[in-house]
Length: 378
Figure (cartoon, rainbow, N blue to C red):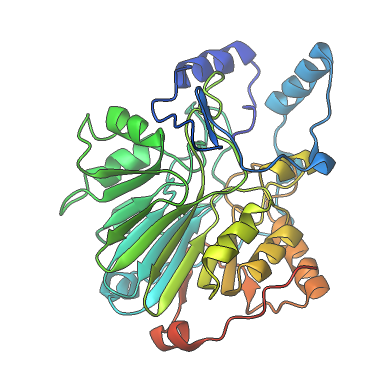
């Protein structure tokens, strides 16, 4: 979710945001689908009233924006260095048979599916998650794997259009990787952005998805899933493109990627479609302060609920430690996750965090035989 840019000249931010997106009619509008609108898309379920954003007057609102723009960010600094580790590039480049997940930072991961397929999730290698090169949420940790050090990428899965999940520079570089372009799997509307800005009009390597749509990729099934969020890259394109989560499955292995989401009944809907649960999941745990952010992102406590209700065997927390997106400290989420684990009876092994650059290996036999925990609600 993009935050107002910290800048002393609001006009520059306004100009950049205006140029970043412009209103249009939804070219994929289908009146038979409740989440479709003539001008874009909507969530399946209403927002949680407990997380309603406070209403403020015009002058109070602009005063808050100016305070945020002029802040030096010290209130979000970590209490201790965010853990990092040198990536095991030898393993990453050689691995063809073992499911493995490497944290690049924030919501960016390299997923190796155990059948020779390399997938990037929401790849962002930029210094800022912003339309501006000189202002906006700044990367606090270098990518865990440099873009130039990646193995050949077969596919990129994109969850939505926000700048901390959709990077123009990163996608352009990846699309021109040695050995051929990856397939780009994108929500409705984001496919049009990719064709215009990344592939120079070539749609042969782009696949577009509505909620619950599926595609096959070299023995994998990819499915785009509904979650509670929103989209925008400018001031006047809110919800013009779709957003969602991803499931990547094959016999013996299943993976869930949350993208950005607020807690909603969509989780029960997904659980009903995947009654055997998931072997591995990456679930957002950051950017949950102030409380009204939780209609867009989940708190660590809600992330644990999602882990349990989806019947995930092993989850890792993401969306923290890299870009200061929420108003909590950039390393607060893992501490609150530990409290939530204890309250809900979940072990650190079942739901923990990785160091940036770390690879979590999931032995194929464990993925195939592990018994799913009961999916219960608190």
